[in-house]
Length: 220
Length: 297
Image (tube, chains in turn yellow, brown):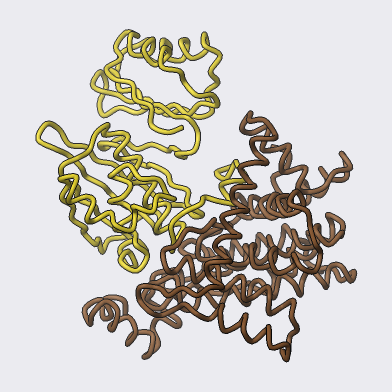
């Protein structure tokens, strides 16, 4: 069940003209911004499928840039996102990809500054809903609608159990969870969608668990 | 989940002796844990946005490309002269549907129902029926919950985007949702809502998504006039006792399979259908330059 709330269908309130190409695109951009945690200095946005063919007409470009500036789907500043990006000191570039993608509305967003860079792949699945399918080379699934956290950790036994037991102790129910890693014993990642919002003090407890590198709230 | 498909939705209304809107509200409470009043208020805000989009469109807007805008005004003026073929109610419905989509095309603020390209059908039918049925604000909000219940079934069992399943999935779904909600607001049974939804969706099957220059303008705006008028016709058929020989859930299944077999040129890529006509390509060239037109051709 991807569309769990009535407001997935009657909503979102948004700037036109396309829920999948404008609102969904803005949400992908905003999720990238939230995961990165700060305003990037540059953005390279690769568009696939219908995104690549029709992005100018649908305002997909201004919407993604608007999302990278942390704007919501209904934020009227989306219309002027290019100018505002310039003011914010963020350069951007769009690359139309010819190759096929699993989903017709796919964007690969690479962002960064002098310190670090970040990459994600997002898909816009219709009606303004978006999902992240890949983060820094890790494949995952995330609806962007439930409270969700990203946990970066070392691939050691007990890391996952310690995180889930902190959540259980605080009566937070896990709706969806994915675990992936690049190689045995190297850096790994958990994506956890929860039914309840995770309070700040619980986030701190999670960060204090063994082998945990970083915990980020990615949607609410 | 209280329902996964239309037959379970109808079953839930019978078991608890409640309306479709009430099933949807109870499910939302269960799903989100939010209080009922908060959910109702949130839907009320969406209703207000829709009302404002209709009003803005009827005052006249123009898109950046110049392809759309102003037709809602023409329709309203024509309706007010009183000498129409399809009658005041249908003209009122379609002028309000077109108004919403013209605001959307002009990058105005709208509420997606279920998508932006199909955002005219639900408010068009709702605000077009308002003078006839004189609903309370509560009934108008319930209309949106009922539309949402049917839309959720389609979204989870088929698709609601033109890129995934063609216009049948967008305007088709929106029109189906609007017709089911119209039946409930007019006092029909939940089963009649399902029949209206089935008949509307059946009549939209196979409709492709072929926007000129890739813009949500041509033919999207007028397709919402078509979808909203079909919604009214199906609602009246269902209220008259006409039923669909193919059950609603099976119609949704057919829509899904048709969408899956549609070539990508006819799924919101701006490469086929009306977009690929000589005039469609010429318009694309005029808006984005010759390079863009050849890319899209």
